Length: 307
Image (tube, rainbow, N blue to C red; front, side, top):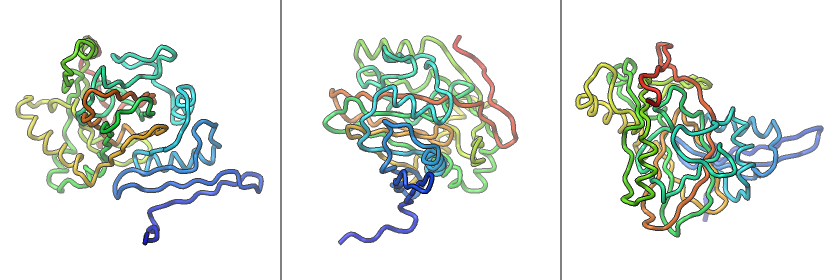
């Protein structure tokens, strides 16, 4: 027999306009520290402002939102992502689909991002958020993991947190670019590394909307400012370990019609590379972010910008 839902498991929303009930939807938690599924919302339509406000609040609270059974086009994905802020026009290195420079085909034949990372954190304005939509799925595998970097910060012992609060890290695209061992994969990898970006970010970033601090790290963070790379690595690994604790992560198994959006300012993600030679294609649309700010109010700054 199925037990009743806990009080904090499901949030039911009934939106009225002019005295009439115009929308009913649920937001259901999928984990204790990160992730929620939104049910009863059709992303192929223009969401009423009252509905979007609740979705945006949940986005800030749960860090990543998942939607099932969405029959939408690239244009409709762009419209949904655009509610969160200005869309990113082009990625610094990755190719876009023919119909829109704002839509990136995340194709497993090009590259497989099987490392924890925050999108384009090697630039001074990493993405605010990223939407992904399933287009071609393998018969097994290819899950997406998303980690709560704010929870990772909260988990730090007080002594370690005091150290992290003062650190800055250099993020670069010349880091953790997996090799597929194929001609197509090597061409994409070469294009990604053709220019070099290096940006110094605070290790502890303050969220511009919620004010919540989080560990701003991931695979592009390669060394600490003022510290040699070989001496930086153990410190970065210790801090990163708190972010990717299993209880701080959500794991999503893709189905046709799935859409997700994660808050890139307080999360990291990982594409599980366990689907062999099968195809996996997701369409990605990103929202332009702002310059990260540390606990001391200082902003991130560029060291190298695509040289």
